[in-house]
Length: 265
Image (cartoon, rainbow, N blue to C red; front, side, top):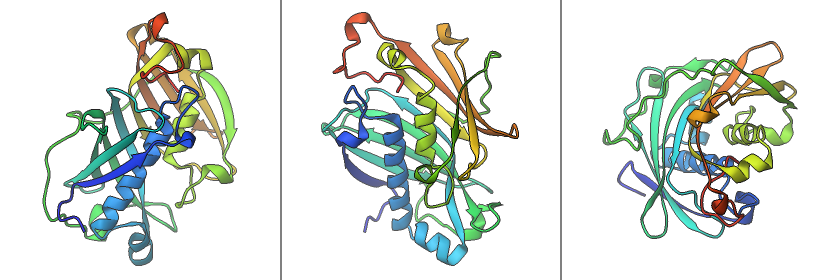
């Protein structure tokens, strides 16, 4: 068992994890982050099984920012290093660095988590589980606070999606990685070939359950400033998530299927 609260996990990027350009999908990356976080929490004695059986709560991701230096590709092996920071009254914070096999940092990420009651779906205070870290790390992967996200004033509907069996996770609601696929589905393949994503920030505001309908919307009115906004609302008008992407347009000579850059996926 690792003595440090820094936890490292290797991932081999398989065909199921990449897009048509053989690049790691952002949704797969979010799944990697979730898996590394779950294992790291388990090493500290606060994994999924103990939280459900002893405290009757579950971990839920509420905010995440990812900054991409160079997106990994098919058949690469990467290492994700993750560590928690001191929690506040309601939230737990966890940072990530993604390294390639040569030890270069390829991706940075920061995240905020909460715990929810598995019966009434309400938030519980962090003190409910009595988690005390053996050490406190103050180092941040990204020196930035996750603040409120707003659109640019020109939101339009992209499509609707009914949540089904394949969308939900162990907590019985839409998994965070599925949100990322829904965000990327707002854009045609041509856009994925023309742009790269330099950063994505997502705020998960409400859970989405099987049978509910999500309307996904986008605002590309600030694309000249290399910014794109996407959100999702329930049929009743409740906001489910908000996301903002920082993008960059590729040169025509860079737009091949084997490019190492990361198009808006």
